[in-house]
Image (cartoon, rainbow, N blue to C red):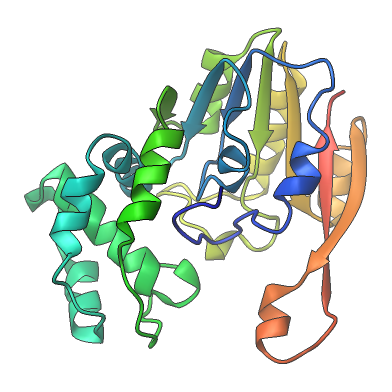
Amino acid sequence: MDSFIAWVGGKKLLRKEIVNRFPEDGFKKYVEVFGGAGWVLFYKEKHAEKEVYNDINSELVNLFKNVKFHPEAVAKELELTLSAREIFEKYKAADVRQMTEIQRAARYLYLIKLSYGATVRSFGCRARNAVDMESLQRVKSRLDGVLIENKSFAKLIPAQDGAGTLFYCDPPYHNTEKYYDTGEDGFGEEMHIFLRDTLKGIKGKFILSYNDDEFIRELYKDFVIEEVERSDNLKMAMGEKGSRYKELIIRNY
């Protein structure tokens, strides 16, 4: 199934390549460290006995939790809401501390759906329905049994590590970090290095997606690195036919 949202760096076009490289001998726990829209998670009905979705973005995590437990209430909040720049800007400027968790979830879903490129930053100037109840119900069903976390990778990976664990990591791509919501501390080169060092010491297995970049190739030179290509959505949207974008799939098995 598809995710119910678009997301910056989403893996809709790469998910099949990633899942096809999952360990052939299986695994007992599947952990998405940088969850985003969850395109890889949603690709199959179930990847393992235990599954974990995690993201550092608390508004995104709150959205996932409320779609899992209260999809009808989230949809109810948006059923009479029009697609309009004025409403978008109002939601964007809203103080989430004054909202219930369901109101926060509805607000964030609206901002994702109606923003340009799902960046939650600027109005997309296209009329779209902010909510699809059938889609939310499918997501609710798929998330049944999935543990939803809101932690940094530095805290999540050690907590979930084990011999039967597979971590899928989709961190902000090197030199494109400004396009991601990475929290107050950002995600500079020292964080890319810290992620590599964290993954190097795990008992489980990891599979990692990155942009094809010399810094990343050097950083992960001791692991299996495969180059893959996909369509470049941004250039295609600008009318450049046949544009391809190179990415890396990196793993420790």
